[in-house]
Amino acid sequence: MTYEPEDTSKGDEYRHTDGTREVVFALADGRILTVKEYPNGEAFDDGVADATYVGVEDDVADLPDASSFADDTEE
Image 1 (cartoon, rainbow, N blue to C red):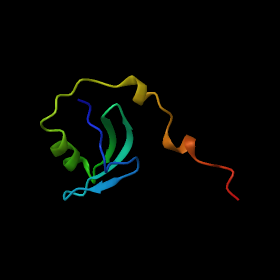
Image 2 (image 1 turned 90 degrees about the vertical axis):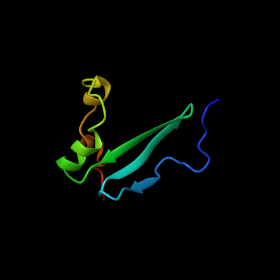
Image 3 (image 1 turned 60 degrees about the vertical axis):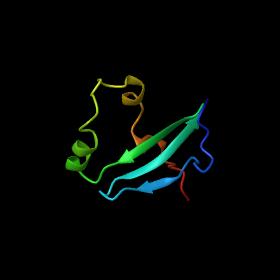
């Protein structure tokens, strides 16, 4: 059975009690991709403390900086 989130949409934003922000980036095939912004390095360390580091995801590391997506044709 594939999970289909009924009330979850791209762009939904959540604020955690530790100051972390999480935004739904994509939904596909029952999976949910989010982007998390931690308020500082200590919060990040705490957030990943129970996770296993598996290296660098090259597809993400090779993305251009966010500034390259800026619209420089502003009027």
